[in-house]
Structure formats: structure tokens, C-alpha cells
Length: 152
Image (cartoon, rainbow, N blue to C red; front, side):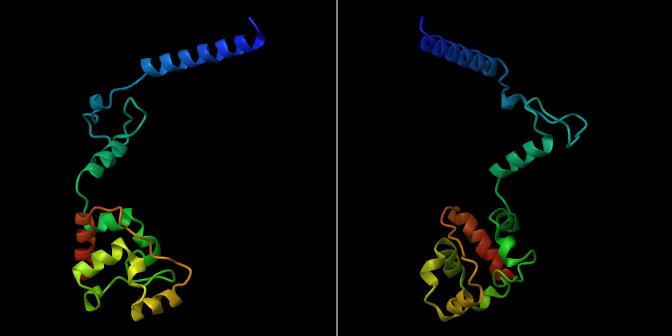
């Protein structure tokens, strides 16, 4: 055998050993349950806490409008109370300027609304920030967000 063949064989052997170890130590996620005492900090066999598992389960359930707003990073620019910051305008009293359908359309594609005078002034005032498109969010969730923001 040449040195190259020896190195290839060693690498292949190491790969097979690591693959075997990962197969043997694999944990079935369906067998993970919370501890009887309800300890939120208890660790499960996979090394994650019960609190983390509950967060993963909650992600599959419907989220409230405020949870959607938090999860999509709106608070980072519009402020913790949604009353604006130096990065973005306030999201209160939107019902004065937006209908539900217009707001959903804006959230899906903000750049298509930049010809409106009010938004032109926002673009000048908040020039360091660009409103992202949320077209990747389910329309039902955008509807929840729009309903919530219009009620503020």
C-alpha cells in the first residue's frame, strides 16, 4: 500500500467509527418528557432544558400578535413600547393612516409604498434604517399583526 492509500483508508475508518458512535448515541426526541416535579431547568437526555423544549413546542402553536412582533424583530427599531425610536417611527395610531389590508400589503412589500408623501418623509428622517419585507410570514400572522397595530 502507498502512503496515500493508507491515509485514505485511515480517514474512511475514522469516518465509519464516528458515524457508528453517532448512530449508537442518537436520542429519540419523542421519548423526551418533562420531569415529574415540573422543574423548568431540568435537563433532558439530549442536553436541552425543559424550558427549551416548551419553546420549541410553542413555536408549532399559533402565536399572539405581540409574540409575532417580538419574534420578527419589530421592537428593535420601533421601540419596546412601539412608540418609536431614533431608528423607526411609532406604530401607534396607525388606524389614522392605514386600513388593515393596506398595512398587510405594506408589511409584505414596503418598497412598493415609498412613493407616498408620508413615507418619503419617514425615509428622510430615518435614513439609516430600511423597513424589511415580511413576505415570508404567513398572511394569517400578518393579519394578526395588522389587527394588533391598528388597535394601538
